[in-house]
Image 1: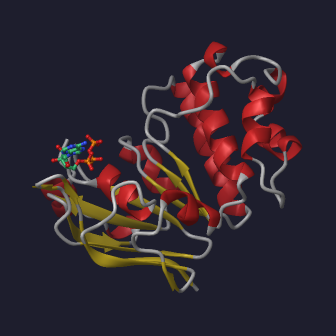
Image 2: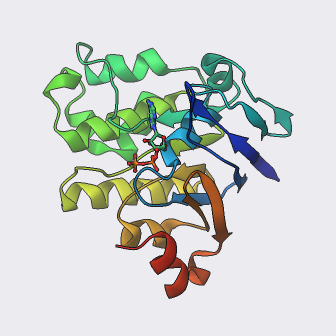
Length: 228
Ligand code: ATP
């Protein structure tokens, strides 16, 4: 079943247009990689889906229901869990308090999060602002999962993290995928992102220019739209 269907999205920051026609879809249980060079509209697409930058035109359907321009908390309650760029946790709450504050009842509990991320169990009583960047990202993912989202969205899943920690994050994403969690993910490290993705969507200047299987992302498309 199609979980998320975004069509022909156009979004603005004030008078400045950032999205000019974004289309993307996430099937239940899929991991979809949202790709494109800096400034091509990945974060704005995510913000639009989550209601933080409501689109001016286009439609967003989630589990078959239009959610375009609902308030962010309503969209969250329908089952979209966001791990924003910059991993925002409550700095003056402990790891445990951060997790419990996000709890909504359901599959995900603090214990399950601590099984996914053993480090969070070890740091249970520490304040979030005393954690390393990688631990904060684990906590941010944990917080999003505590809402039992049908779709988890990660913006810059591993940005700024040390290689060992990045591998922990990718391992957790693989574990979630194995459980059937649907995920939309942005990350700059293509070589780490592609192996976990079922499908890719490529943005260029605020538009979807390509989507397909990771294996079909050929040299031509890489050079043209993802050029490094
Ligand atoms: P990055 O990888 O650098 O985060 P991105 O693909 O996520 O890039 P966006 O952040 O969505 O791209 O930016 C898309 C366009 O919108 C860019 O031209 C950017 O300059 C513009 N933009 C982003 N945020 C704002 C803002 N708050 N106000 C005005 N313009 C913005």
